[in-house]
Length: 257
Ligand SMILES: [Zn+2]
View: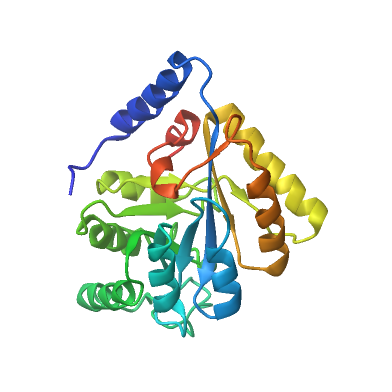
C-alpha cells in the first residue's frame, strides 16, 4: 500500500503524463473498455469474453456464473474487476447477492468484501455496481478504499456519474490507484447511438490521450464491438486493459475534486 497522495501530487502526475505524451511526438490514442454486469447469463458472458483484444470485465459477486466467467476471462489473459454492489440511498441493491449495505459495521463490511472478492477470482480491481452512495456516504467509500488498499496493486474504477464524485478523491487520499469512466457505450442500444458513443470515446482519446468506456453484455453492444474492435487500426487507436489507464485523471477533473 502506497502512502496517501495529496491532490497537488495527483495534479502533477496528470500533468506529467500529458507532457510525456506530447514529448513523444505523435502518441497513439488509447481506449479502455470495461464490460459490466457479468455473472448471471453464461452465454452472453462468454460471448463478451470473446471480444477481440484486451477488453476488461467487471464481474458481479456470488452470481451463478460469476466465478467461472472470471476464471475464463483470466485464462484468456483479460483483466477482471470485482463489480461490487453498493446499496444506494434508495436501497435499490438490497436484493443483489454480495451487496454492501449501509447498515454494516466496519467488521461486517470487511467480511462482505472478502466474501465478494473470493467469488470473483483473479480480480485485480474494483468497480461499484449501481447505487450512488458515494456523495452521501463518504464513510463507506473510505472503508471500500481501505479494503482495496489492503490488496497490493488493486485499483478502483469510478463510474463518474456525477462531476462531484467523491470516490476518486477518497481513492487518491487512500493511496488507491484509480481510473474514471468517460463514456457509457450503451445507455441507448440503437446502432446509431452505439456508433455515436464509440465515436465520442475515440474522439476523447484523441483529445486526452486515454479514454475509458463502460458497456454491458447486451446483444446489440456485443455485436457492435465484435465488428468495431476488429476494425480498430492499431496505428491510429490502441485498445488497452483498464489497468493501463490508471491515474490518468485530467487536471480539470482533479481541480474539481
Ligand atoms: Zn453494474
